Image 1 (cartoon, helix red, strand yellow):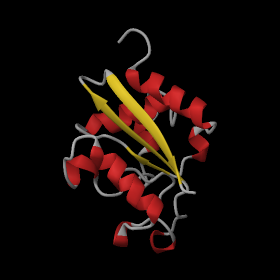
Image 2 (cartoon, rainbow, N blue to C red):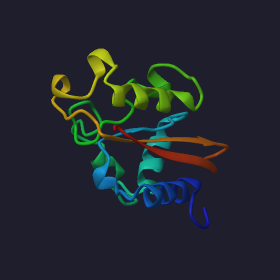
Image 3 (cartoon, rainbow, N blue to C red):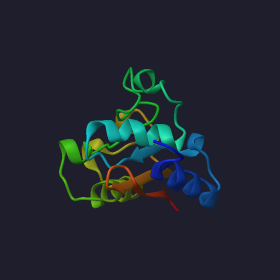
Image 4 (tube, helix red, strand yellow):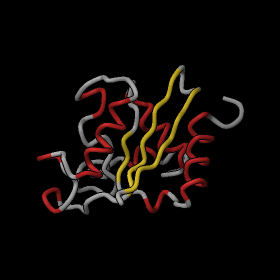
Length: 136
């Protein structure tokens, strides 16, 4: 692919508008229409460099209690397919503390999330939206 991807552009824009970096994010809810879209999207957002994805995902990093919980409901591939609403719905519920047994916090040996990055995409990874939610 020539030039930046939709994910890279959307991610850079969202981080610039919010004034945060990937280091400030507590969890991610990523549109997972296919298994590889999560890795490509997180790479383009700057969580890791190209070629580092395999190592980044090892040892439970993306599980509740891991360093960067991702798709805590199971995402679209494991929970339900509500188009772009799946990531947003789970992120809002996590921020509000309404996720029951999968709620991030002391029960899952992690902190309750303050900042969650969400996204959606369409086409073949061409059209992206990236939004960052913060608990007030």
